[in-house]
Length: 126
Image: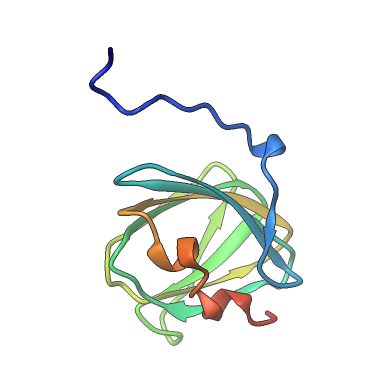
C-alpha cells in the first residue's frame, strides 16, 4: 500500500487541444503544486498584458515570442527556440508570437483561471 499519490504519464499528442481563440491553443497537465502547459501560437497571436500570483517559466520549443515585461512601453525581450524566460509572480507581461510558435509554460502554483475557464483575456480573439 502506497502513501503517495499515483504517478501519471501523459502524452501531449494523446491529449485534446483546448482552442482558446483562432490563434492560441493549449494542453495542460496539473499536479498539486505545479502545472505544465503546451501552448501553440500562430504568428501574430497576442497574449495581452496581464499578471498573476503564479511564478512562470516559459521555454520556447520552436518559433519565437516577443515579451514586454512591466509595461507595454518596456523594451521587448525576444525568446527563441531553446531559450527559457522566468517571470516572477505578480510581474505584468505581454507576449506576441513573431512566428508560429510552440512553447511550454510551467506555473507554480497551478493557474486556477486556466483550470476553471475564467481566463477571458486569452479567450478573446487575438
